[in-house]
Length: 487
Ligand code: CMC
Image (cartoon, rainbow, N blue to C red):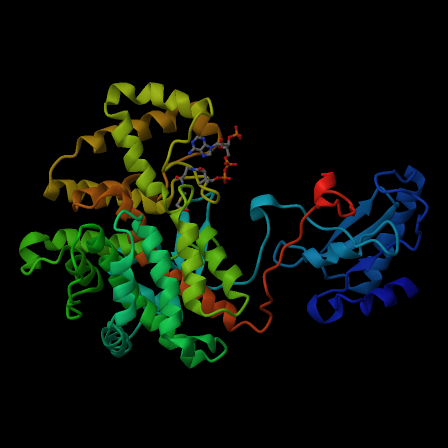
């Protein structure tokens, strides 16, 4: 009991943070054992007995995970809440009093919860994706991007007045700082458009120094509006610079997707060039990509934002994470893969190279979805509609052959690898006339609202702490300096 008392006031402050005190349940301490050695079975039995009795004496309703450390024979009751245990509770598990304590090992954070969030729900086994409780299928069918952006940010569908105000705020903020325009014009036009976006997002922070006040909710709101207004402009400026063309003015009276297409393509008579059905397809794609809980880029935004840097730097980090081919860059990689395959006859050989580990089938597989990515299903339907307008694309046939062959193949079936959001999206952007390098930029423009919602949620959470994981050090022990002439 005395030991339990000590732990209540431990340096980790469990008493105030945890719903139930983490308790070592066995008073028996085998301090003479080295890490990795085993406690004798009798001692384990004894430990278990005292664990149960101590537990019921504490709080019979508190679910606990009982764990016995075979190095010491001591048993522990780890409080379970929402099917998780607090990782810091592990730190009381020690062999020696002065040990650091146990850590959990989780490369890729595959099984680690980093916080509470009410923005997005995914059931990867069932293929369910909801933003704020609304199924993605319904949002893509009925919503407009800004309506869904408001929902993602505020938790409710906007009233007509709220949506009007939101749109007006974004219109008013659609003014590109001159320095940023000059910066983009000075970049190497061969630079990848995602690199251009990363650079220009970070540079925007310098134009709005008040954004450093990340603790003021009103200041945060202003930056959220600015980033939603300016990100498609940055994307369009970069795209046009790569084509040797200057930027053209935004037409904020158009829809968000329509204005984005206008700024990219710059047609005077935009409606003649872009059928409304394509504008609607882009709007749906933006909605489908708007948010996806703790993905790599959202996690990058959270990790960087947790240092209390301004949101422009945080979302620049998010864009950098998205750029990679295992994340948002997969849509570009899918198109390049389809170009390489070139013919349906080559599909089986290509899949064999994926199965033998020489390469990955891009646009397939997901950390969370072990079923069809619900976004991929909707995008598959959108693609068919877009091709009706833009004409048949032979790459669609290759993509469909790849999908059909892969989902029937035991390699992909056993690993639960299905098409993800990136499998068909590039074909639609391609039909709209964009180069593969632009595809991830579309993803970034869409995802900006998800990043910002996570950033704002995190900054509003008083329990937010700087993200700082641990490591298992595998390097040298302390070494003495070697003079240069003796190395
Ligand atoms: N092609 C072939 N094999 C694959 C693939 C793939 N696309 N994805 C996973 N596997 C295999 C992998 O080799 C491993 O096999 P084994 O168990 O024999 O070692 C098994 O499936 C599990 O893979 P993992 O790498 O442990 O899975 P992960 O959760 O770490 O990675 C992923 C998820 C999305 C990075 C991965 O599936 C992948 O690289 N897919 C291709 C890239 C892609 O399409 N990315 C877009 C993801 S969705 C949108 C987004 O997030 O932006």
